[in-house]
Image (cartoon, rainbow, N blue to C red):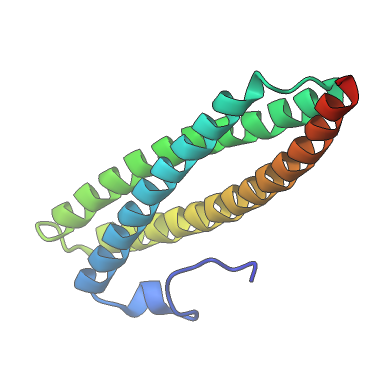
Length: 149
């Protein structure tokens, strides 16, 4: 479950054709656009309910996870830019099929894939933490409001 790669293992990147790498890269772009929207929603969720938090411990926990979501958002934007650049490199390979260019592209592809896999892992961890903290905050803040009455 710790490996979020979207390709078979072994020598796939070194042996596959350009069309398959293109399809995989477009898939990454689609996934990253989904994560961008998902992170926007999570950030909105934090903003919307942040003002209702009354307990300092809860406030600190939500701020911490909010920073993680913001970091994920920045990383998503960076990865989207890298994927776009990578797609451009793939297009230029049709003009320059030298083995040096192809090797560099495949190495870049591997690095990008590893970065995306790490990003997905971090987003999932932050989302899980946000939901756990949200559940705790809702329960503890509800108790605090009941005790005031």
